[in-house]
Amino acid sequence: MSAPGRIPLALRLLGRVGLFQLRQAEWADSTGHSAVVIRVIAGAMLALTVTTGCASCSGSAEQARLATLKAEQAELKAEQAETAANRARAAAQQAQIAADRAQKAVEDATREINRVAEHLDRMNHTAGDSD
Image (tube, rainbow, N blue to C red; front, side):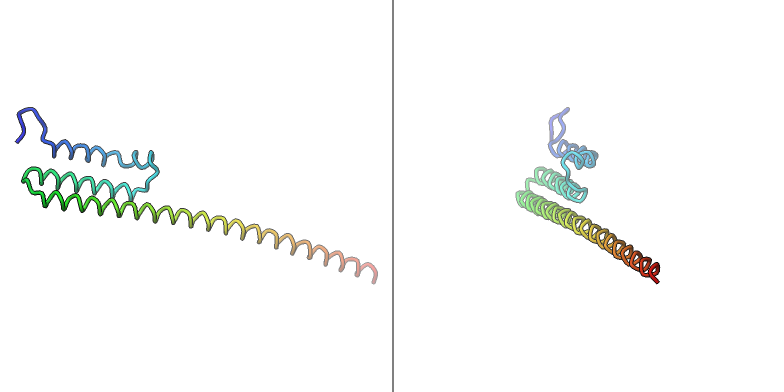
């Protein structure tokens, strides 16, 4: 129980997590993290806050340990998701470079075909004039 006029720690923590969840998009823009990473972190924070609050109310050290373990697992998953997103971003950049090179090759081939076609037209035109 808390003293009159004081907000219990669990409720204060829940309020902070709630504020974070309301500002996820803003935080994602400022940090550059993807929405998936933000949601995983927010979920981990919420799970940790709720279970820590419950553990502090009941005094169960085991619940607090489990909550910490779950939060660490969620953080690991968030890091893995961010790593995967970075790999996907790098692959997309490599694909764009390959597409640019292919486009240039097509343009070069088109110019060569047009050059050869013009040369053949001139040869045909010249052969037609001498007949």
